Image 1: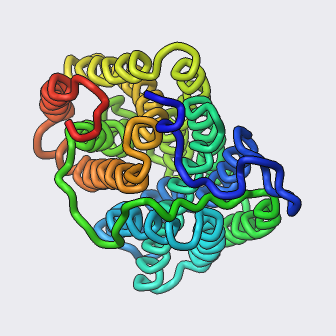
Image 2: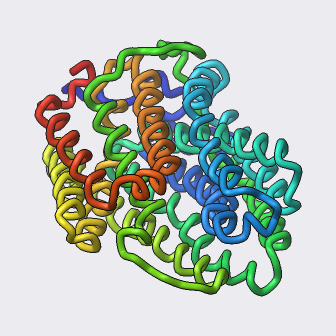
Length: 395
């Protein structure tokens, strides 16, 4: 794989220092700044995952409504992932990231005032666009850094800190001052960070072959991403308390414990993602990626065998490495004019997997048990693993 074929092509204005303050190529600064924006921009969304399940009914929402609000943003990304990539080709990455940042502040502000249900749904769909923008743009900046793996790892570590902070301090603040001041404060925090765009360069790739509306046959890597996201980011995130069998009566305490359980996966991402990126750049991307695949399979198999806590931790660790490195397949292992398209397909596979897993988790555990679903997932992962011998995307 030649050096010229491994990086995002046609990155404009990044080969030398810019007079207007833009940052030169092979710098981690754009990755860090864009990741900080994503971290703070995602705090309002993250808090909803522990706030609405506990307090949603007191706000007049049914369980069905709560489930819709917590999943519709992920389903909306099936469309917004592609739109963001297309808009980025037309207008440049920086403008799309700015739009996503502003809209994330707007949606966080909307959460503060418990709007009518149609405004709740609209705000969650707008957040879906914001998240697609954050994810796509931070990955593009990582691709200009000179060391893709390390940049992806550092970026993901920073991105996870915002939701972790939301999980840890959000429930405590809500118990003390109420939800409205907390969401307003975090909306203001996003606005304060807008001057960071002064130091963000633009990335334009007009040669990218991406359509605003299209459907392509998935590759085995897409299937792998879908199943791992369904299991780790869907079943485990929503159903981890079922696996560990925690029983708490106080709504406030339950919100805090649920936040700690959910944040454990993100905290592992903070610790492991930079290490996995460094290993990828220093040793071997393929070996690091395959080790992470084996860890996910082993973790899911242990859960199926009844070793829930050990299995969850191993699956979380494997997923932290796996999901950090997967964007590098689009950046470094695809044709120069296809990385927008392939990154869009992989992001969509992840969103569909995590959304369906989160939506169906409690019903699956109620109808079956907490073991059989992970047996099925283990078998599916092993099958896909054998069908995915290389990282050539078309396989």
